[in-house]
Length: 120
Image 1 (cartoon, one colour):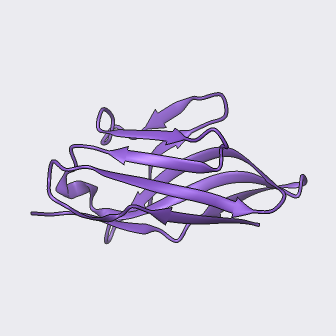
Image 2 (tube, helix red, strand yellow):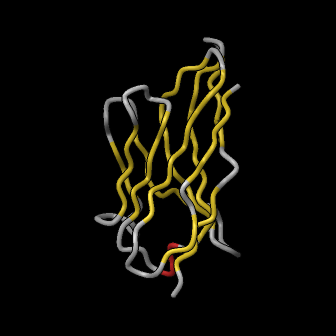
């Protein structure tokens, strides 16, 4: 199994910045893709950004040029740097990884989520 723990959420004024972190832990796993999703009240969960093996990164149109996804050299931590935050970025942000467990089974893994609130 893979456990994901997100940190870095909070309250920030419009135009401000936050950096989210997600650390993966467990035993006998290998991570492939890592991503951030978000879910605003009354809305469906949406993809924010992904980082794939090989370094390919993709962003939702609504966050391009403002958000940056990255992962550390151990490939078990993923970050989301969020700049120029807007009220519409308010949501619970979830970390996601696609991981190979025990060398046999590929599995979708989710964190618990961290609240980001953009408000003056």
